[in-house]
Amino acid sequence: MTTTDQDTNTPSALRALEDGRPSVRLRAALAIGSTIGSTPDARSVERLVERCAVEPDFSVREMLTWALTRHAASITVPRLIDELRSERAQARSQALHTLSKIGDRQAWPAITGALLSDADDEVARSAWRAAVVLVPEGEEPGPAGALAAQLGRGGRDTQLSLSRALIALGEAAALPALRPAMTDPDPRVRHHAMATERLLRDPEAGFEYAIEEAKRIAALQDRP
Image 1: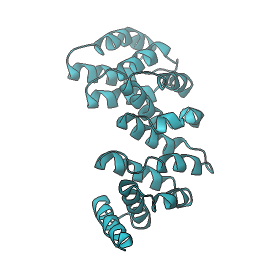
Image 2 (image 1 turned 90 degrees about the vertical axis):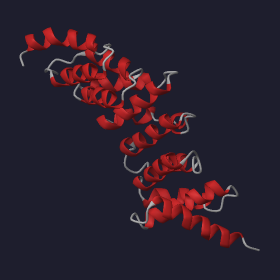
Image 3 (image 1 turned 180 degrees about the vertical axis):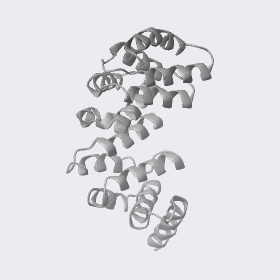
Image 4 (image 1 turned 120 degrees about the vertical axis):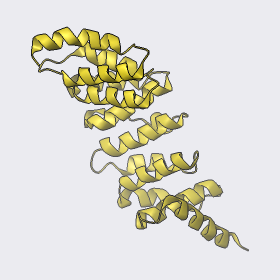
């Protein structure tokens, strides 16, 4: 597609992001990502980021993220970092998700402890995944400790996300972070830590099995 074609089609695609039909918004995001030329387009980045904050459809959000990854990181990353300060949980979550897909480590300082412990589970889970991707080599113990402080949080999906993130940070970082939690007086924390350690040793064990095994072991340990 020529630069002229891109200039002609981008405004209409940006307008279509506001259409009431998810299929139209999906095609619009695809069109924007498919027509990125050699010239950075800050206008498209701004509209894509704004739409990520409010888009209700999962598939459309994924396409919006893909379109953002097609733009130059020099434009997208600073704008997405700004979005991490939004009061809207979806804006923070989607910005974190997109930063993890871009994978540019200049974003690492923006993955703060406040985001890793965000009160919204989706934001926190996105922050955990982003931390795994963006953490510089050798700095894994920092996020591992922050993640371990969240052990026992939420339901099955949230706990599984946290376990996966800790495991992805590597045994050298995860084990020292897990050990104190494995004797925590709170049974949810203790069981989650023990299950994560089990999965670290045996990834094939399965999360539910690891949790039930942790409960059995903890019950034996608690016997007088």
